[in-house]
Length: 164
Image (cartoon, rainbow, N blue to C red; front, side, top):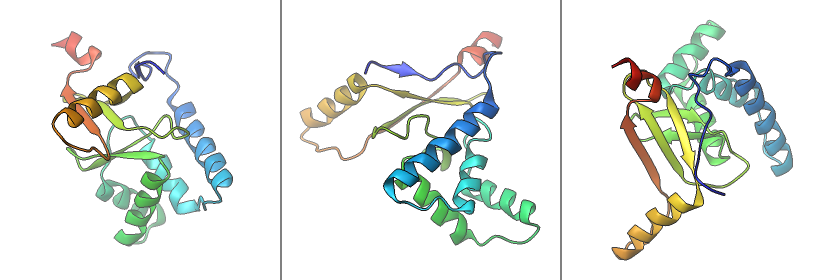
C-alpha cells in the first residue's frame, strides 16, 4: 500500500452523510465479525465523532448526548464508549488536541498520521507503509523500540492556504 491521503473534504462532490453511514455500517460489520457489542451509545458516539471532519472532544460528545437525551449523561459512559471505539480502531485520539476523529480504514491495523488545519480544523488521516517504516526506522536508529506511532502535522489545508 502506498502513501494515501483521504479525499479532499473541501471538494464540492464530497458526500459527508455517506461518510457517516459508511462508518456505522463498517463498525457494525466489524463488531459482528469480532463478536463485539456495538451498543446504541457506542453507535451514537461514533456518529457524533463522524458528524464532521473536525476533531471533537469528550466533553463536546458528553454535552451533545446530554442535550439529545434531555438528561445528564455520566462522563464514564462517554469515556467507556470512546475507549471501545479506539480499541476497535473506529476512531483515533489526537493527542495534541485531546480530541477524537473517525478512522476511515478500521479494517486494517495501522498507525495514526494526521494533517491538521490550524485555520478550519479539518483533519485528514494519511497512511502508508513507507511512512510508518521510515518512522520506525528512525526510532530504531536511535535505539528506541516503538510500540505506537502518532504523527500530527499542523498547518494549513489547501483551501485555507489558497485564501491567505
